[in-house]
Length: 429
Image 1: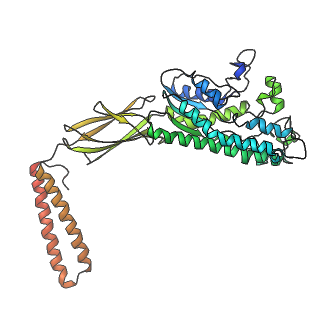
Image 2: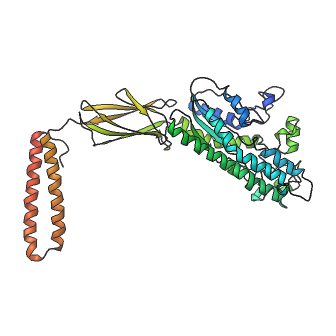
Image 3: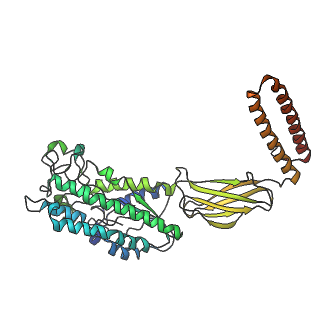
C-alpha cells in the first residue's frame, strides 16, 4: 500500500487507477512480480492510493481478499505528517526566513509527529489475522546529492521548482523531520510485535530498511535539468516539480520516488521479503539424548529458512498430533513421552512453504541395571580423573600407591562394561 509512478504502458492515462496513481512501476508491485516469478506462482493484490493516511488506510484494509495472505506491504505515515508538502513549502517560504525557523511550521510538524504513534497503533491493530507477515517500509531521504552533498548547497543546488530550498532547510528536513518519522515507524513495528507476544494469532511485523541508503546521492538535486552539468548523468530517484507537471499533469508527484526510486524500493523489499520463498529448514533437540521409550523427554523444535530467518506460527506436530505453534524466534518447546522405540516424526506446517519433517530415533528403554551400571562407570571415571591430578603433585613415595588405585578402579570399570554388554545395554561409556 503506497503510490506508484506513471506507467504509459497501461492505458491512455498511464495508471491502473488514475485517482490513486496506481502504476505497474510501483516498488511493491515490482517486488511482488519478482518474488512470484522466483516462487513459481502467486497472486498480487494492488490497493495502494496516493495521499493515503492512517485514517484512509483503515478503509483500504477492508478491501483485502479473504483467505491466507502471506505478505502485506505498507507505506504509511508520511502523509499524516505532510512530509513532502512541508519540504516543498520551504521552497516558497519568504526570504530571508528559513521555514524551520517558522514556529508555525515546526510546531505543526512536532505535533503531527507526536500523534503519529497512536495513529499507527490503530492501523496495525486493524490488520486482519489472515495476514501472516506485514512489511512496513521506511521513507527515503530525498535531500542528498552527488558525492553526499546536501541538496541546496553550492555544489548541489535544487532546481526545477526546488531552487529555493536551502541547504539548512534540507538538513532540517532530513535530521529533524524524516529521521524522527522513520524512528517512529520502527518503534511502532517493535510495539506491534510485542503486542503479538500476548496474542500469537496476530501478523508478524517487519520494518524494511535499506531504502534511505539506496536513495543517498540520488535526491531531488541530481540528474538532468540542473545547473551543474556534471550531475546530469547522476540518476535522480525523486521527482521534481517539473517532473510531476510534465509526467502526470499535476504537482502531486513532486518529492515522491520516480521510476528509478520505485525500482530501488523494490530492491529493498525483495531483500526483506526473500525469506518468504526460501526452502524451510528445521532442527530438533531432545533431553535426554536420545529419548527413551515410555519416559518423558524435553523436545525443542526450531524452524526457519536456510538464511536463519525464523518461521513464526508454524504448527508443530509429533506423529500427527498437533501440539502448538512456533514463537517469534521460530522455536517451540514441549515435554513428550514416546510410547514406543524406533523412528518418530516431528513435523512443522509452515503454511506458505509447506510441511517440513524430522525423523527422530527413540531408544529402547534400558533395564534399570543398565542405568545403574552407566552411572557407576561415570562416577568411577571421575575418581580416576581426580587421582590422576593428585599423581602429578604427589611425592615420589606416594605415586606407586596412587597408580595401584587407578589400576584397581579401571579394572572395576571394565567389569561393569562387560556386564552392560551381557545385558545388551546401549550407549556404554
